[in-house]
Amino acid sequence: LSQAQRRLGDYAAAEASAHGVITQNPKSPWGYYALAESLEERHQYQAVVDELSKAVADFRATSADASFDVGLLLPHLAFAYQELGQHDKAIASFEEARQLAPKDPAIAAYLVEANIAGKKYAAAVDAAKGALVENPGDLRLTRLEAQALRQGGKPDQGIALLEAAVKEHADDPTA
Image 1 (cartoon, rainbow, N blue to C red):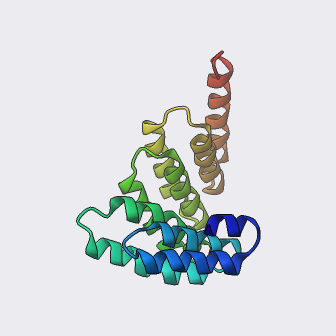
Image 2 (cartoon, rainbow, N blue to C red):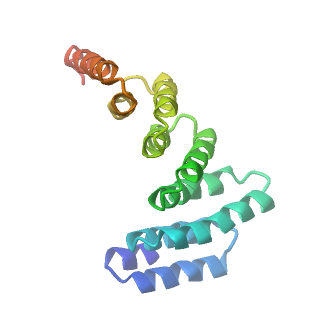
């Protein structure tokens, strides 16, 4: 219901529905997930941090294996930190999400992007390279590694990386 209301532009109702889900079942991450989406839609990033940081802490404290619950919420928390300019907290949240889902290329890309936003270019390159081991040929990760190289003062290496990726995919008839 909250998602439908959000998609229709009724953000107050979406937020109220999400709070209703949280009240009915505070042990489920889905109400918090819907709440985060509603708050993000209105660019209320501090509210996302306020709501999700407490929820993530509660899930960690009350569940023997809270990896799914925490993993579902951490990217939203990290994006909110990033939007607030709290890059170290965003990076730490994405790193934790990456530990929970080490093979997820989207989470890896978010971590790389957070490092770039925080001007931690060497860490961004390292994160991209590590993710490319699990996801070889992922063009998004390759592009992000090249971006980190460029912004870190190594544009020639970034260009070479992109040229190699283009050549590799041009030679692959299935790409």
